[in-house]
Image 1 (cartoon, rainbow, N blue to C red):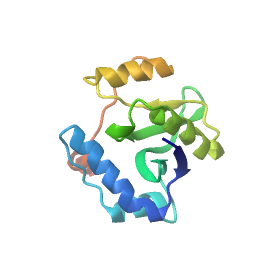
Image 2 (spheres, helix red, strand yellow; image 1 turned 180 degrees about the horizontal axis):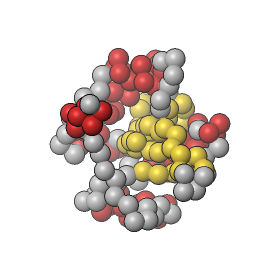
Image 3 (cartoon, rainbow, N blue to C red; image 1 turned 90 degrees about the vertical axis):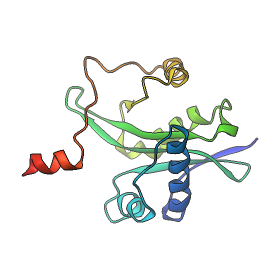
Length: 156
């Protein structure tokens, strides 16, 4: 199997959406994103994320979606990995690790000093894999989210 990696462009929006849907379906969820939202947020006048596609023998094998993160504690920029997905038939072949490495290259203009991601605490296989790559738990912090309705109430 020959695998190549490349930065996704606007022509890849339908494929990115399909891969996001596959990823969500594997964990019994769905996504609210659309092609229009991906185009606007990733490939519009002010892109908010970048994506890398892995292709094995001309077929999509996986992707990662990243954006810049700033740590005031570190005083450095990093990469936040929002999504990392490898199709089942390509798992165990090094695609995931190579996608993360390609993400660092795609974000080289940010000069990242670290990479952050979140993994489902129930996904023991993924946790072990990330441990082997050198990822560690963030110190004394839990990731919290304030969803749309609550965010609206907060903003008044």
